[in-house]
Amino acid sequence: MKRLVVNADDFGFTRDVNEGIVEAHRRGILTAASLMANGRAFDHAVALARENPSLDVGAHLTLAGRFDLEAEIDAQIAKILEAGIRPTHLDTHKHTHLFPPVLRLVARASQKHGIPWVRRPFDYPLNPKGIPWSARMASGALGFLRGRFHRVLAEHGCRTTDHFAGFQITGRFGPAALAQLIRRLPDGSTEFMCHPGFCGPELRAARTRLKESRARELEALTSPEVRAALDESGVRLVSFREL
Image (cartoon, rainbow, N blue to C red; front, top):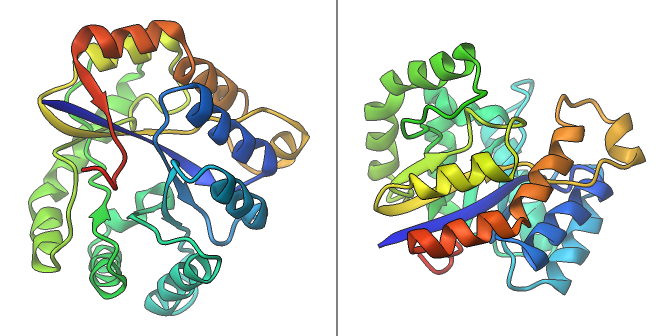
């Protein structure tokens, strides 16, 4: 069976990003979102999550490395819990949990707070058109971390999907590319990372390279072409709660 979790990063970043994420869930194939406790639009995201209980919400940890990282991780998770949200999954901004010291702290937090799922940010092999060689090389270079990464997760009882996709094509895909990716999904469970949003005034003023591309990703996630690819390929959309 092919099962797909479509998970949006940056929930809580800006209100226009939040609204795009919810739109992708209501009208499209998005099943989950990762909430930024330090995001400027955190309260807005929490309110939207309450209005959309079918949206699976996790924690998107933002770690700058200037403080006690373990305390910072605990504080961000505590803020989400205090808002009445029970996160089902953990991931990190810019995949900082690929670094061994951060990974161990994230795995420990998963075990401590009973948050079972942790992202494995290793793309399965893809060769879609329009992906720069540099992005493919960066994705491939992460492979040497894979063995230790999974050993640490196993030591702490963390769960992860069988596969992951989205690193190489972040900010670079539309309906056709996403439909192609879905048709090539391997058997088992896959997390697809995405960054949808409306490109409104708040996002345009924010410090991020992902602006107009968020609107293109939203278009792809709500596209009939993508929905048809799911049906044709026998892929079942699921949330982390359902896995």
